[in-house]
Image (cartoon, rainbow, N blue to C red; front, side, top):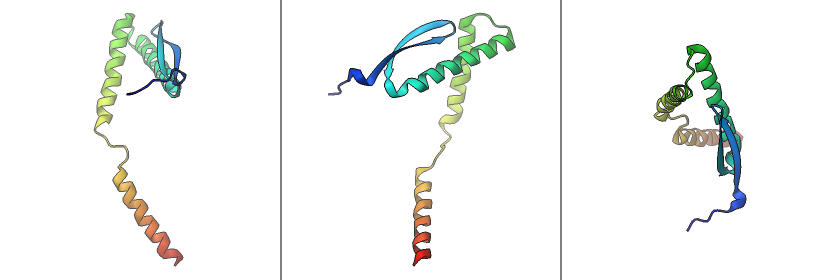
Length: 101
């Protein structure tokens, strides 16, 4: 059974597209949530300026599409190959061991 401890959570309010959203989040996620909301607002502002779109729903849809597109591009791209790093570290350790003998 998973138990949630209230002290591990935080109630915050974030503003996106001139609307305030109350959220209950894990304390260690606050910075990332606030940064994400700020990034969304930045994208919305850029779209509003560049494309003269005034409807907030259209702006939010364009922003969602951009962010989802980025996610799809990066989904299959493996940023770090743990097995390769492990092999390289093992090789480096062997080289160092041999060098100090």
